[in-house]
Image 1 (cartoon, helix red, strand yellow):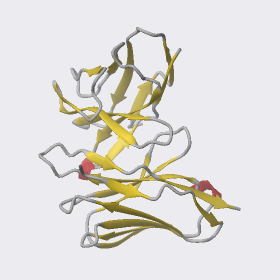
Image 2 (cartoon, helix red, strand yellow; image 1 turned 120 degrees about the horizontal axis):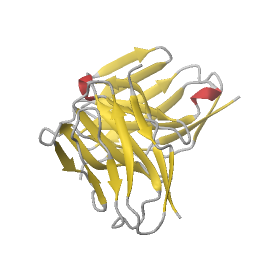
Image 3 (cartoon, one colour; image 1 turned 90 degrees about the vertical axis):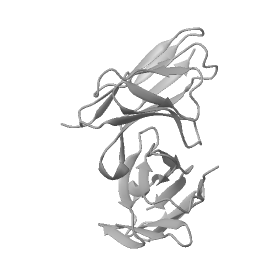
Image 4 (tube, rainbow over the protein chains, first blue to last red; image 1 turned 180 degrees about the vertical axis):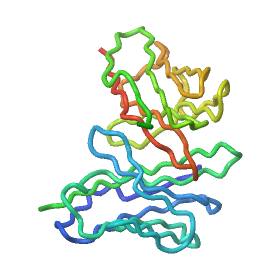
Length: 113
Length: 111
């Protein structure tokens, strides 16, 4: 059973701090990794995707991928109260050609003013 | 405006009733997905379709049915065989790089 694991939280950080969200995955052959943000009662929205080892930056967000350790993280710099949400990690299932995503359960983030 | 629409936003079902949830996209995406989300749980795949006139069961297909007659549309029917249908239903389509984009969701409640 392929799995994506995230710490459920809640992760609580003060406004202006760096929030670090972590995700591990079991399928060593996975090639594509995604971070989504989901506000309470709303649908998930894509924040970032990453395919290559290393860092990828987009504004206040940085995704970090380490395929050898099967680990992907999301850093949020200068955290704002509006960043308070659940963050979902998803990984492509490489079995066959179905291109399905395997989802983590999400980490709840609370940014305190 | 390109995007994915789902209707209705809220739906109430009586015991023994079939209901159909609508999902439409104008992104010209071939692949579409239906997920179910329960409180405190992750996204669970119900059905997916990679191309018109073709679809496959996901992890929790029992009690659900779909059709894919048009590229833009992927409706989901929740049948009376689904014993615990109260949940948040999310439709998504797949764009470049395997990225999935979601509609706003339908919240289904059994009365």
